[in-house]
Image (cartoon, rainbow, N blue to C red; front, side):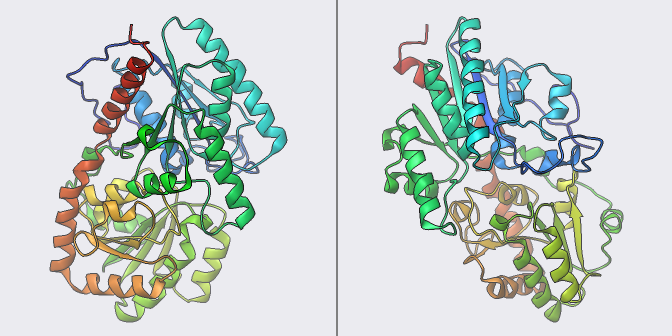
Length: 432
C-alpha cells in the first residue's frame, strides 16, 4: 500500500474514486488488538510479533484497509487510527508512518483498571485532536471493547459524529447468561451515543434490532471488504507450495483462522479424522495460531494423523495457500461474517462451513458451498468427502463463488463508509 508491498509477492493496488470527498474531515478509528494481555509485547521475545499481522480480526483489517486506501490518496482525511495495543499488525505501518497511536490499556479482556485508564487516555487524545483540527472530527470504532470505551470517550471529548462497526457481537450464545446480558446492556447504552451503525451482515443487523440496540434508521449494511485482485487465481508452482507446507500429492483441505474457542479448531481435526477414512490421500492444513494450539496438537496426535494434518501457524502467503488448496473449511461457533469466506470465493474455492450469523450471506448452501450447524463435524466431514470425490461439482461451486465475491470488494467498502460520513455531516449541518 502507498506503493509498497505489504506482504510477500503482492501489490495492493489503489483505485482512484471518481467522486472526491465534498468535505475535508478527520476520521479517527479506534480498535483493540486481538492478542491476549499475557502475550509478550517485545519483538525480541515474541516470535509472533512480526507475523501476527495477517491474522488479526476483521475489525483490525478494516481499520488499516480504510486508512491506507482512503488516506493513501486523499480520499477522505483518515489522519489517525488509535490502534490500541498496536502490536504486530500495526507496528509495521507505525514504523513507517507517524499517524498511528498505541495505548496499552485498551485490551480485549475485561479489566476495570485497564478500562478506566483507556477511557481517560482516549478522552484526552480525542479532545486534543478535536482542538487541533479545524474541520469536523469523526470517530469510527470497531470491536466490542474499543466500541464501548471509544464511544463513551468520544462523547466526553465533544466529538460531533460517532460511528461504530459491528464485526459480530461481543456477546454470544456460548457465554453465561449474566455475561451475555451485561454485554447487551453495554451495547444498548453506548447505542445512545452512536450516530451511525455499520453491520457487516444482515443477520447481525436483525439481531441488533431484535435486542433494541440503537435505532433501525441508524443501521447501514457495509460488507467487510477484501482486495479481490490479491486472491484472484493466478499461475503458481503448486508442487513447490505444497512441499513448503509439508504436503504431498492428493487433495488439500485448508482452514484459515486463529486458534481460539470461537473458531472451534478442534472440530477441524475431528473432520480430518473422518475424511481420511474415506479419502486417505487427503491433506489438511490449518493456517493460524492461538491459545488452543497445545490442545489441538494433542488431539491430532491422539487421532494418529500428524503426518496428514499440518499446523502452518501465522502466514503471509494466504492467497497462494488458497490457490494450492482444493477446499476451504471453517468450523466457527459464531461470526459476524468471516472474511475468509470471500477470500476463498475470490480464489475460486468451494467452501464447507458452519451456518452462523452472516455466513449464509456469503456461502449460499448448495451453490458455492455447504453450510452445517455449529459442532456438526460429522455433517461437515460428509460434505467434504462428497466434494473431494466430485471434482466437477467442487469446481462448479468454486466458479460460482468467484461470481458472488464481487459484493465484498474493499474499494466499495471504503467508498460506502465515506458516503456515510458525508451523510452524517450533512444531517448535522457540518458539511461546510
